[in-house]
Length: 150
Image (tube, rainbow, N blue to C red; front, side, top):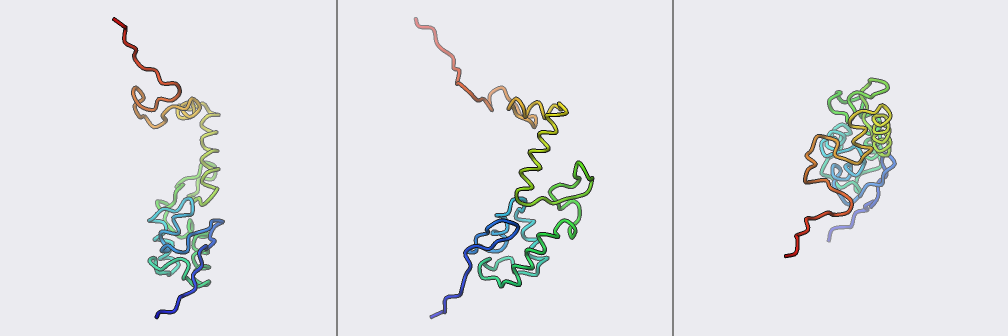
């Protein structure tokens, strides 16, 4: 019989509890701002097997992952970050966790404030990216066609 290995069911990286029963790349996608490609790059930069279960990693490997996540934007080219040119600094940044949500809200509020087309569309709750609105995206009370009784 194989001896049961210790497995940690939760691993905390970047203020997020990651599932220890999943492979490293899949578990890392639990962090907001980390997709599959970014997760693979982080695992390779940390020197960790991407297919190893997250809960079976040693504490040293988890610390390597934490360190790579913290310094990710400095180690990768500008095209690999999720915010290639920050509005305020002009520098490339990669946002993780709650930073993603707060930055998105700030950007939308800025668009509303300067009264850009996209900002006005956000305000009125309409489609923003040029989709058709004649037949889709309808909200509120449904209005149908009533037939005249004969």
